[in-house]
Length: 156
Image (tube, rainbow, N blue to C red; front, side, top):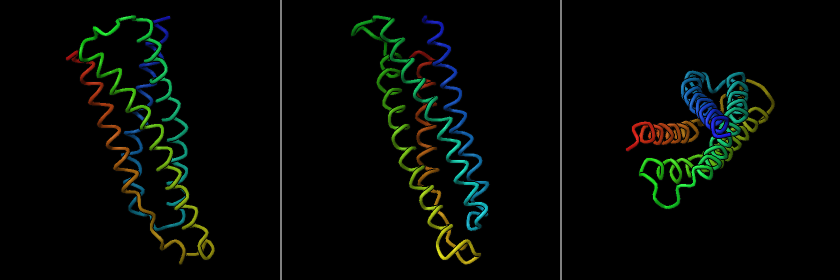
């Protein structure tokens, strides 16, 4: 059972980090043409696909990590790396689920408003959608996940 949980944990972690890095690479490339209607539609589809991959993988990481910690039965005598993984990793996973859901929903709402304002003409396309807060949040989460991964890998 522990081996299956470890596999789910590592597979979820790979998908989670991969989706975060992908969003950080793809959205700035689309950002150049963010004022066009087609780019706004593409950004909406990218963030929706990101949510479909990132949220379940973060949930797999969280649930499998909790179940593995329960199976280990270490009590309060945990090494620092395991404590960081438990508390830091769990907090990051929960914050990622909540904040990327909220920020992604707001971004998609702004895209829909920009597309429906005065019809889908070129005049409405001039409303640029701000991606900076979503990209900043994704970068912070990716850096935090990688920091926890480094601490756990080095077993500090």
